[in-house]
Length: 143
Image (cartoon, rainbow, N blue to C red; front, side, top):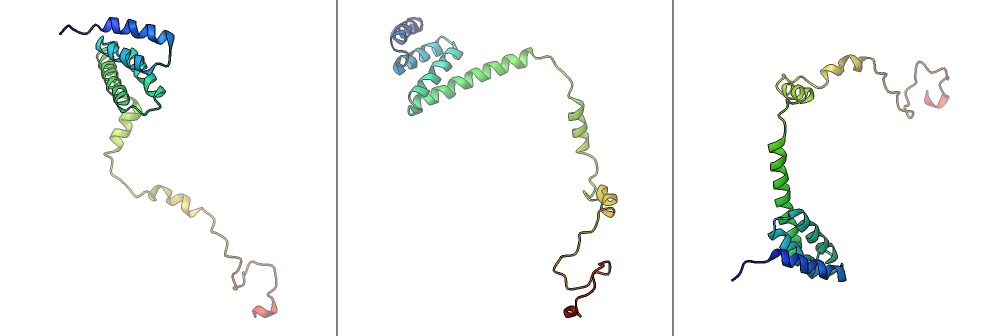
């Protein structure tokens, strides 16, 4: 059995897609060939287009999108990590890290000075008790 000729498949599918850009079978075949050629970004584009045109009904194509996306993400993450310059963590991160080891106090303790200066809520309006600060005279039926 001869090895697959992925470059010829890509060329044939290109011609078929020039005639009908929504030809899903050609998109799938070209995506498989591109994946064989390790042109993963182009394969991902074709698999995604085929999945959308199929209205997400073809599970094989949807699985292929996930498979190729995983390859692309792994490859790019590896490149990013290899080419990244080392740097120190930010001041905010270090502060938050060390704050995690401080002894915890009650969350109300810092609020105690504020609590003493808050006004008391007014008594309910339906209270039958007379308010000594009220300028109104008492009504005869309450006495």
